[in-house]
Length: 360
Length: 251
Image (tube, rainbow over all chains, first blue to last red; front, side, top):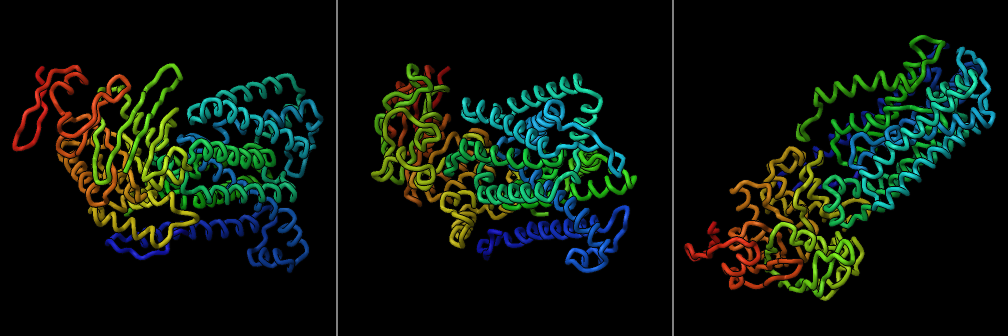
């Protein structure tokens, strides 16, 4: 972190910084342990020691196959998606000065749904087949992902275009997002209404969200986009901190507010759109992971950004493991689980008021 | 030294909010901007550090026109304290550290922390420096915002109604603080203020804005009942009480 210093005015700033760093380290360890547990748990239980061996290519061939080929990609996608969605949500909430900003509330997810629905209905992406978990899968994932990505980026650029015409005010961005969200939700509903049963099932299945559908290539693309975005966001952490004191104060501190807002929105939307187009709609993570961490580390983006990213990864790992194990071998929709687990936790934190004072 | 030269601003070309604004402020001098609501006081202050861009004119700080500088360079020359500061879940210490933002490249240096801690000590902010600013009282928050502005090490300090949300005790404390800073740091201070008596007590010169133009500018000699009455359209008398001028409304 940024702070290696001695206090000279009797203020114990070092101790305060150490507490924030400790929170980050705790989250990192928890995420690692949860990932290990998630890889070992499933219809074929593999002990953690065997998981560790398998990850390095040792141990029984069956364990290596299940661990490396089946579970590891899913776990990696959960971690990357959690980091990406939470970091994107965190930055959107900062630059739009609105606690409800996220990929879902700004229409990016709805745009992706519409793109997927177009691919499934008109472009032959909608053949349905059964798999071992007795669910349906979309048969042409590349086409569907591409259409979903293009549609969600279209939403992003319309929001940015409209905002640019009105000096990129947060209100314009949010209202444009809400309007487009409604428009694309309606358009998707119309497509579903006129599609065949098979196509409709495929559209609905796609919107459920599924971490298992991402290929290794998808994971690599998502990882590059997510970590590049995270680096960009961390470079701008002082700009986001300045925005916390108001737009005029930030301008007075040398921040080009319009540019920070436009580029930040583009990068955050691109990250969310990439993830959503690969794994479908995973709502709530981008919205609540930053809010949960605000209770613990405050609004200082030096700590809030990495903390939110780790919390997003942890929440998605826990939700996915829960979705896989609760009525195994059936895998429940991840989007529903994130909402079911996240909402009560969020409400609890709001009413409990954890970490209300920085000095506590 | 701050010199404003033929400044003009309007939201539309045919509707001027500020017209031909010219004045200067010496180092170690605090100038009060006075006038009715809507006279353009806050707009003028925002023009002085290009938060909004004037259509014409120059704002010269130590021979350099800040309107031609980059955002970061402007922030190294002028600091702005907004009328209403927004509270957030960042600590007062970190809010003051934000004042070093124009100088921070990747991370703050030891020198940045030293400057912040010196300001905290000089303004006696230790008690609440590790509290979130959204938990501070109005007076405490305003002091933190002034401390943040000082951390920018500006040559010009711009304050937009810094006492508008404060009780009498805090109004006096904050203005005394600004007065001391002006002299100690030897910087030019421009302050938008509504209370004429507080302006008389703590400022060195007075600029009246009326109908988008400067009505009059000068020292104690411009604080007459005629000038004040003409600007505010309210009859007043200016009396002397314990060697201090006092404005008393006659309505």
